[in-house]
Every structure is written in structure tokens, then in C-alpha cells.
Image (cartoon, rainbow, N blue to C red):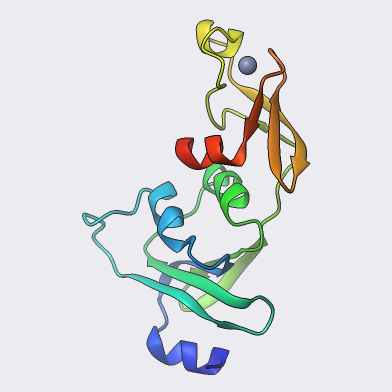
Length: 156
Ligand SMILES: [Zn+2]
């Protein structure tokens, strides 16, 4: 199957978001992160493990009526760093965002350490340096605790 055939499966959307080149099998997690569940009132198309020239297999999601926030982008970049986010407006791609894992994140997840100042002092928000991208490891700037991909997958 080539990318031309993929377009036959899913029709174009007028306004919304298309997330392409998602690592195979991650599409469901992406919908979860974006808060899309069975109550979402608009069309959602999800294609898992379709052929991709670049990455052999990929997932794709199309979400009608969904505007992606910078915070969504940050979360998605940790789950699907290969993905591209296409903002669709009036059937056209208005903006294309190539996800990549940032070097630093704030207010992203809670620190794993319950005694961390970011968990115990209200105005202080969590803050992490990305010390490794593959495998993914974050370090709390306050207590130096390390967070790995497993922890992030559970918390995102
Ligand atoms: Zn901490």
C-alpha cells in the first residue's frame, strides 16, 4: 500500500488536526493524551500500521475540530518524536509542526519524588532537564530524581 491509497481510506477534513508519521501502535495513546474519547463529538480517523516510505510502518490520526495547544505538542513530542502535526484549516495544511524532544520541560508531569519541592510547595511548578533522548530520561531540576520513559508513559 502506498500513501496514495491511504488517502482513500480517510477523507479530508475541513478543520482540525492530522498527526502523521506516528510510531506504529502509538495512535491510541496519542488520542488519550489529547483527551479524545468516545464522547468526542466530531469525526476521528485512526489508521494503525500502514506502510510508510520513511519509516516502514506508521500510525496516522485525523481529528476533526481539534485545535492542538503548545502543551499538547510538548506531550506528543515525548510519545511520538517522529510525528508531524498538520493544522488543517479549510481543507488546507495551514501549519506543519515537526515534533522533536525538547531539552527542557516545565509543568509537564509531576516529579516522581513525593517530597520534591515541586510537589509540596504550591507556586513551584515541576521542571525537568532532558538528559537523554534515547532512551528517554528526564532529571528534576529541584531534587535530581530521574524519570524514564516507563514513568512518562504512565503519567502522560
Ligand atoms: Zn523533583
